[in-house]
Length: 130
Image (cartoon, one colour):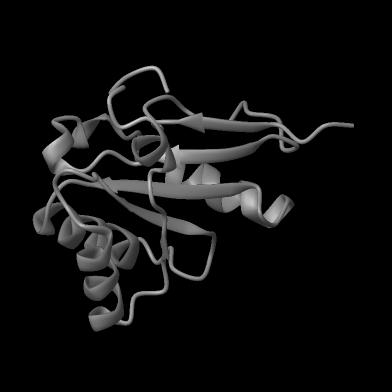
């Protein structure tokens, strides 16, 4: 009788994940150095999960640059994901100002959520393990 959320980078297949588990998939952008780690078949698994249980998946993109933003925007547009599930764009605090990212999103009329990395504000001196 608990809600379980699993955050993953999406590098492994999500098809065996129980439908009751909400998956938050962190799609790696180019500046992360891991953009090719996402298992593209997961897009089909996500669509299947959403048909069975609405709000069972979310996507998250952590953005280090305007290039990352443009890449993420192309990703969600190319795969027709906007409006299908919550999509979060989160700025890397020391590289992209939240206000700047908000402006890019508004200028493009992109239906995504701006998500600030709260842990970087609460614990600015800790870079890992928060």
